[in-house]
Image (cartoon, rainbow, N blue to C red; front, side, top):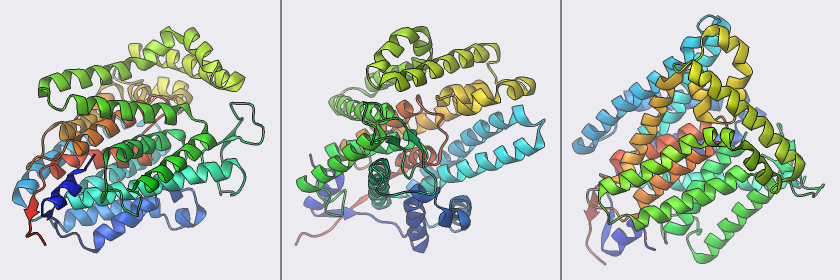
Length: 427
């Protein structure tokens, strides 16, 4: 399949590119540093803590948008996005106001996560920068996948390493996370890159990776990462993302209301997944045991018990637990392996609703036609990637660096889809 950029270039057209400057170069370096935050040299210079806020503040102080139509749309969306994130953050902080030390630490984390979310929103301004971001995400996915495999087989050792027993009885190949801190981040990246590989043609992925040989190489690297991680989340997220992409392409000619109903059913089912798991836990555990042995079964049992505890608390405290309950259940709140339960426990329906609103804005950008119309691959990529995040956070606490960066990237498509394509003479 041809992509939007390749098709445009084939008809004598080029991307209309806004002026970006050196700040976009720094932004790109920051994206490439995302897998390296656990390395001491990065932590020492606080690149992960200071660069994202600096980039966001500079972008706000030195605006470079020159297209009024895009700027107006972008401004309205930015205000809504900031308001939703602020609602999420405040809702998360209210239960812990009684403990100043915890409160100020979590306030900084919430602010920092906001900068991670806003940096792509502020710097992805047109089709050109969106394409660059896609290439950067491919690069860090490759870095993460290779590191997982090399750490698992003992070729490299990191400052911080996390291992677990092999799920298939191979003693010399433990489960590894690699450079990223959790499997959820890798699941999000895998979903995005897998859809990119099946949807985009020459000229889009770059680095020679858009040829058949290049794509096969990338698929091989993703497979090595799966072997090293042995993560069901990564495999499931990849399959879901590709399935949603395929369904979206099939539905591209249907009415928007029909697409909305179908995609809403998918997201509603995903939100209901923890409750279904708690109800049908015994069946789930027996199925999991066949996909990883006793260790995987033990993990599943523990997570299902935490789901049941969390749901009981959420029913009792729909607007989040009070401070006394927070002190009692802090371990559950921090470690429950489901982002939606985590949000509902600490911030209640306001926090979870605000994050759902951010997902809706990302979906909205991918569900509407471009001006001029983009080929279906880009909107379908955005919708499928939102689904990949949605599924990934069902199996880990979420709210991580990579989740916010990817969600911000998808939100940016709200104005990217309005990008102009300039006509140039052939030859």
